[in-house]
Each structure stands twice: as structure tokens, then as C-alpha cells.
Amino acid sequence: MGLSCSHHDDPCAGGSCGCEGGDDCALDCVVSPCELDCTDLSNCDLACVDDCQATCEDLSNCRLDCQEDCTLVCDRLSDCDAACGPRCDYACRNVSNCDVAVGPESLVLCAQVSNCDVDCFGAACRVTCDNVGNCNVRCLDLEGNEVGGPSQEDDGTVVCG
Image 1 (cartoon, rainbow, N blue to C red):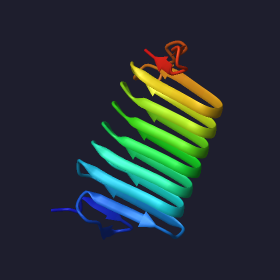
Image 2: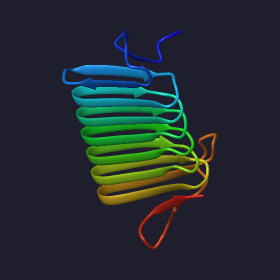
Image 3: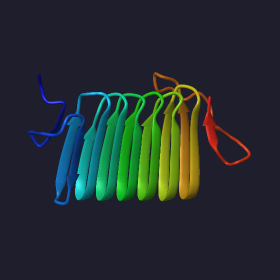
Image 4: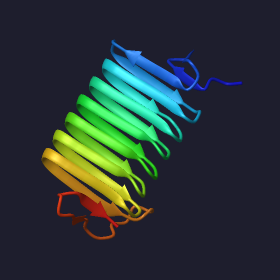
């Protein structure tokens, strides 16, 4: 049986992996469910498949990739770049720049960030921007073609589809 989760070519405990302190870390998890954590680093690159929980905290830069049904969190960073498929729950807090691409039926929260750029692929994407300098939401079909602008609900939530 191969490694379910790897960190710099070393095995991690089942579907859980983490890095703390240092310069760079890359974590890759191929089992579902999976939990990945990066804390107090310069750069972190996290990748997982379905039903993943990935967190980056107190970093300079973080890259998160997940296929579907994932919870992705960036907190206290310079830059957070994330990509997730359907049913993604993404939170970006206390970050200079949040850049995320999410699939259908996803929820995005940007709070206390300078720039929040969201590409919503498919229908039923919801974006909440709280205390954000720039909140840019693009509504796209599954092929990446723009399908019109988002609408805004009474509570300020931006909705695609």
C-alpha cells in the first residue's frame, strides 16, 4: 500500500499531515477524508482529493488545491491561492490577497483582507466579503466562460447562478 499522505517524501499518519515552522512545506494527500495543516512557515503548498480539510495559518504564502467537498482555511497570511471543485467551503481571513477558484455549490468568506478575487465555476456559488478592500467575483460556466455578473442579496452576499 502506498503512502496516503506525504510530506517531503516522509510518511504522515494516515490521512493527517502537518508542517510547523521553517521555510517551505509541501503536503500531498491522496486519501479521503484527509486533514492538512501548515503553521508558522514561509510558504506552503497543500494538495488533496475529496473530503479534505486544509488549513494555512501564520504564513507568507499558501497554495491550496482540492477536488470536491473540501474545507479550506487561510488565516494571517500575505497571499492565499486556492482551487477547489464542487461544494467547497473556503475562508480567507486576515490576508493581504485571497485568490480562489471554486466549483458549483461552494461558499466563500473573505474577511479583513485587502483583495479578494473569486472565480465561481458553475451554479449556486455564494461569496461573503466582510471588511474587504476589493471584492471581485466572476461567474463562469464549467468551461470558464463568463455567464454574466453576480447578484447581491440583502445581507451583502454575492451570488452566482
